[in-house]
Length: 223
Figure 1 (cartoon, rainbow, N blue to C red):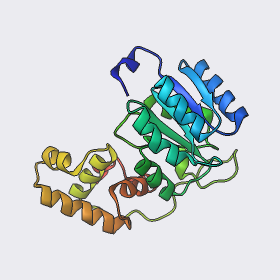
Figure 2 (figure 1 turned 90 degrees about the horizontal axis):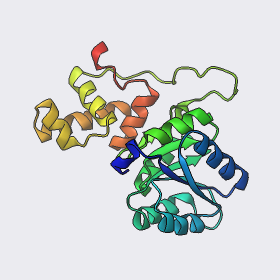
Figure 3 (figure 1 turned 90 degrees about the vertical axis):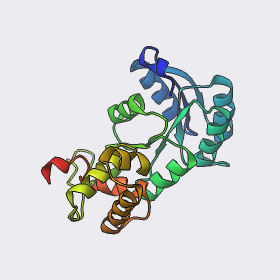
Figure 4 (figure 1 turned 45 degrees about the horizontal axis):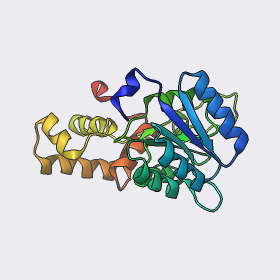
């Protein structure tokens, strides 16, 4: 996202086939100080408007008729390369987060989360990262109930594994992590491989998602 957003309101395009949702969200974003530049009600219309308007942020629904939001996300990354895409969806499966990131999205927000959470994520989203809304990991179904701690027993990590995991959580690549921690690239890759095994995942993104579920990120000082 351009640096000018620090002083100028982010220009946001909302793409959702549910017209009421799209219009209400645009109004809420405008009320929160963002510049809601338009609403689109299909993937094709969203791509065309993104190309014309060149927004800073595109809020993209995943499930839409004729063309899904992930395909549209890939196309928007081509026609509006300076825009960041935040997908909104009813899906909570971490696999969808991976697919969204692979399509070029920079944020993942559940539709049944709070409006304040959605606005918070949109105010912090940046290119080159994957910001996942906390409610993605909520398992509670009762709207008024407090969310329980994520299920599952956290694996025991060494101090160095925790440091590598925290760096992954900041969106750092393996080469950068190796430089920061003062270790060789191969050693760093070994730690990443160990983390994959302990967390039961197959990619760095899945590792970060699983670590968020288990509340492991940012806990190096406790180990």
